[in-house]
Structures are given as C-alpha cells and as structure tokens.
Image (cartoon, rainbow over all chains, first blue to last red):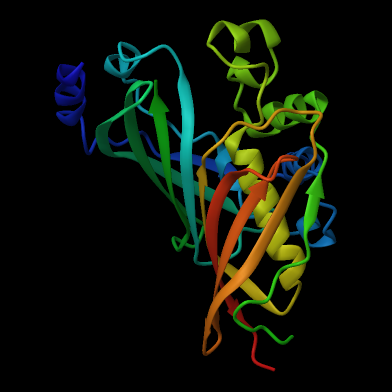
Length: 136
Length: 131
C-alpha cells in the first residue's frame, strides 16, 4: 500500500486547468434552496460554501483508486477575502497539495489534500479553499 | 452587537431528508452515490445514505452568518467530518465564541446528532464591524 503513497507523492504540485464560471442567480438559488438557508442576502451574494459547486478540476489519480474501496470527506477549510456576488466571473485552479497515510484500528486511510484558489473578474483572490479527501 | 468569549450562538436545528441530499447533489455537482443510492451506500459498508460533509459545512456556515447578520463578516470556516449523519434525524448545529481580540472573534463550531455525538467539529473567524 505504501507504494501507492510514493507514486502519489510524485504527483504533488499537479495543477488542474483554470476554469472560469459566471456566478448565475439560478445556480445560487438552487444551492441556497438545497442547503435550506433563507437569508435574503443570498439573493445577491454567494453563501460561504457555494464555491464547491463551481466544479473545480480535480486531478485524475488512478493510483488513489487502488487504495481501499471508497471515498470519505475528511474536512474542508475556506478563507474568505472578498464576497462573491451574482454576476461575478470566478476563475479557479486546483492543486494537489499533500498526501499521507494513517493507520487506524480498522485499517489504513489515505489522505489527499487539494487546494483551490478562486479569483474574480478583477483579478483579485476572493476565496482560498483546502479540502481533505480520504480513501479507505 | 456584543460578542464575548464563552457566548453561545443560537442553535440551528436542521432536519435533513433524502430529498435534500438529492437537491444538494444536483446543486453542488457531487453525485457520489453514497448520498442518494441506499443499495450502493450499503455495498460500501455504510448503514445507508449519508449527508454530504459539505452540506454540514454549509449548515455551520449558516449558523455563523445568520447570527452575525450585518454586524460582521465571516473570514474563515474550517470543518472536520468526524461521524456519519443519516437523513431523517435532526442535526443540531452549535457554536461558541472562543476568543475575541479587537474586532476579530474566533468561534468553535460543531454539529451534534440526536445522541449528542459531535459528528462535525470546526472553527470560524469573524471580523466584527465597529460599533
């Protein structure tokens, strides 16, 4: 199993393609309805976790699929520099930032960490995110 | 708004349903089958379909932004998914002010299931408006 970690380690720093997404009112509304947050503020602004719905590119890591039988989400971190408003055009790029293995009572877990930076149409970084995905 | 260390945020109780998980899958683009296909979920060793971790993160985001209103801005949100949550069970979203320094406050956040287990733990940083 540890060879999987070594092979993944060689892919660290991988970056996805840049992706540009216009922030559409209908998409934000469907997201807000799905999370059940009635704050009228989300009629003009994207709620805190909306960036995850922009479908950032994640790397194809077939090596990771050799480990365990399924995915779990370990955690997420968001840093907010500026609000994202409906009508903005957000450009994002995801980077494969870290990989490590942990051994628990029920076997091994493989942790993959991805970082994404989101910029608006003015070239300013608005959100940075860091997600930890687990193979088990 | 007065914000002091130790202060509790008003609790937010969510009642997630399988329908909501399907809605969230569609709106977020996360179509992993463990969130809406019972048979698939059980085939990978889960007790049934489970909530998206990021849906719980969204609930904790709502807990903070609805409390803050226009009195400040959310500057960071961090969550760690510790336990599984199933639809059809109430999920209690809670938080407490850990510390205040100038116009910045650090919050401790968590979700609690019906048995009182903390299934998500996290933190947030908020910047408070003057006055």
